[in-house]
Length: 327
Image (cartoon, rainbow, N blue to C red; front, side, top):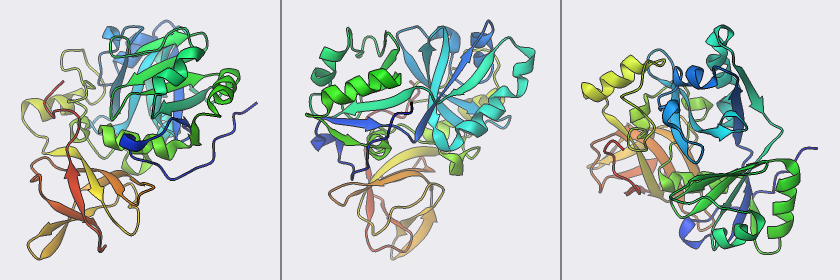
């Protein structure tokens, strides 16, 4: 039996978010199992899979031969293999690319739509979850497994939890929290990811950017010490030759419409406006503010003024909760 997604409501900023339980239907789960799972994944993604312990999750990119990302992935150990979470809009295309060489390895790669992805965030999220599980993840142990449930901890923009679980447990959590928590859908989690500076790659931006253009080097998502993987040469060249001139930025302000992934913005230059950047994601909050995640030149002035194309409102840069130096 499928789990019914929660109805949407306008997202709130993290600083004033009440306890919120979210269904994360815009994200999707996949798995790799089998004798060669670690070796195969190690040869396909930017992070060091061999160094990933059972109590950690990591951000990684899956690139084409030119070093452009098919997608980024949140990778972790699960049920004797590995699982990862990515945007649903490109999951099937990413799996097609990942499976291209799997015939030569003892692995099984599959989409997993049997399990449910839930987010818990907002006021006293930890206290709300504590009675429901024997242990919760935190900074020292960002991944905890409790029966059928994987619990992933995120620090920014404020402590929050992502749960990968079965329908029965998802129902139990919903029943337990329903009276105290507001229910929402993926848009609230998306808003939190924008605030956290975690890159969101949807199908419109697949195979468009090298990982460093979305700050993956600053988020611990690229190992420059591991062996070969698809696209490694181009990713390494961007680091050692300084070839990457772009970065992910977080903008906030007002606009009359929400820009789509793949759109450009406009930068104020004196009395004129010049097109710049590529939008990765954008969300309008319940107070009317617009949050935008955008890839632009990495030398933007902090007081730069932007706008959605031909719009009357303006957007400004908000500092990210991490340094752009390599993690």
